[in-house]
Image (tube, rainbow, N blue to C red; front, side, top):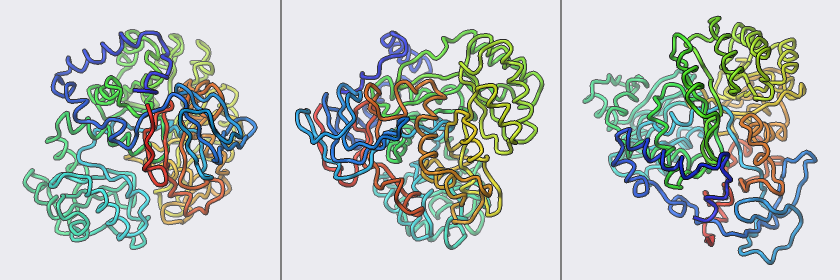
Length: 548
């Protein structure tokens, strides 16, 4: 397929890795799953994309390059999956020309901290759009639209990433309201924060009761029990389809890459994204960290480092390093030994660091690791760092490491003083990547994260951030593009719209630098390209047919 092989491999071993991927899937007992990869997942055309011409010109747009000079152009020329020119062209000469009619183009967004593999294997047919719902009626409408694409009798689900605080009624939907929204489908939703409850429809209640899960008279259900019951009846084909669905939703939001943090999933869960990659149907880029947070020692991390090739993969799918946990305790002194081992062996590492005790401990431990290896050059980072102090910011700056930070305060209660000190961190000059920590902790939608970063307001439009620590929309966009690309060693090929870089682009539904806060948090992408391949079409571009 045109555009699929335009991402130059990091190592010249794609044929070997491709064969190994198929073999690994077969060895995992997924002969049927591997054989059905092409049959049960969408081709680029079926998922809203129709290929990639060898020579494409996007013109008459508002192109926010996000380069060092904040250049704004009106056209982007793409050839063989890469950007060959950015400027002010009227078109002509290209194999295909797309008139953007003033639409804003940005580099594809990159979530530097997400549990995407876990999200893809969640049971049911996801309805993540409810993250933006602001009333029960809107939530019902979103579920009704999703039901049009879900087979009768199949579960519609959303586990985490939203809560009742953002609904004007400040309550969960009732079973009757869920029944009305999707009369042919059982529904179960569970919230993060705001009560942390699960709610199910009448059909859903019948399923859970039959499977030994208690459903209360008001339709509420324990989220973990509900997920466990649904996961027990999932097939490999379900998980493969769910992973493809998650990719489709990401590209709808303008995401063209995610950095997965692992956790709470076994190694077999990675085979579904790997199957999409091997069948040339992985419509976004995935980087992942090797998580070993269940280990009471550090032998799991050491074994992985000793027996894996560091960052083996291509521009579409590869590991970054180890983290976000390397031991089952984040402050056990053995972590220092783990960090030194990773540093000595030249591996990138990221570490969950959320409490004041964790932040202080990890900075000191990283300083020890820096004595035995160049951790700044390996682009080590700390995650979250909400309570970081000015003195600790200075220590991080001195080490030359980065931070991946999130806006999950969007679903915290008013007055929570949630999130890191965004402005202080931006002004420090520390390399920063932005993410979500989705979906148990926060929404997957990057625009909701950036809304919080730039306003300090939660999903009920009430202040929950740190007073005086909001940043500009441009700063937020930079963290979600070039900042995140830096943390994964992709800044030479991604993160800005410049000649020579890969054509990962999002043509947005609104201009993010001009729209109101309300419209900003509802931005989507009407046209998303990954390596020149169109992977998402909607709105004014829905009917375009791309050659190739």
